[in-house]
Image (cartoon, rainbow, N blue to C red; front, side, top):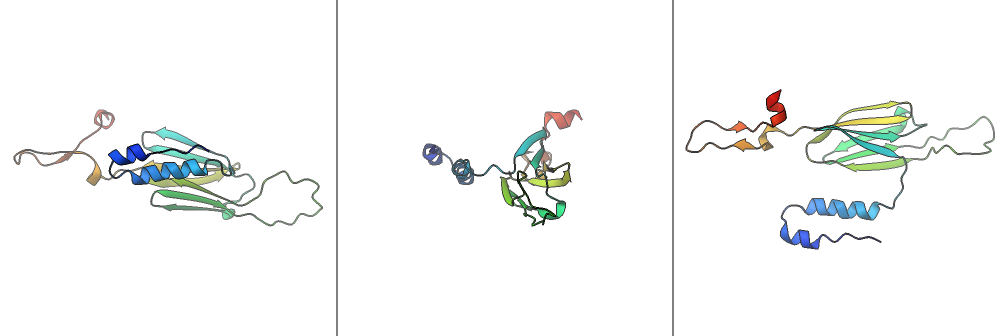
Length: 154
């Protein structure tokens, strides 16, 4: 089993415990269940999309919960009675729970289910209070938010 040892990094960093714990937990759980399959897409500097293949699930069967730094997607198995005797069951209709760790200030913007794909759009909105600010020396001009080159050109 591959175990990552972050001890040298933990000795020389402060405040990154959550990050190291997250990476170790993900490494432990890497061999787990891969159902349902999913994609994570970066759509812009602060926009992301998670797409899960949930064929056979209806909106009422799915539950999406967003907490601080955690997105949980659950699917509940339906007990549908078939008219006849099933000779082969190859379509997965089992319950699942998929967890996604989110960075600070990332929130769910939208969720949609179409053609067996659950699409969850995420956006990162950093509040002005935590953005870098220019500090005036000697009581000159008041503080102002530092603008990125991209937003300054717009």
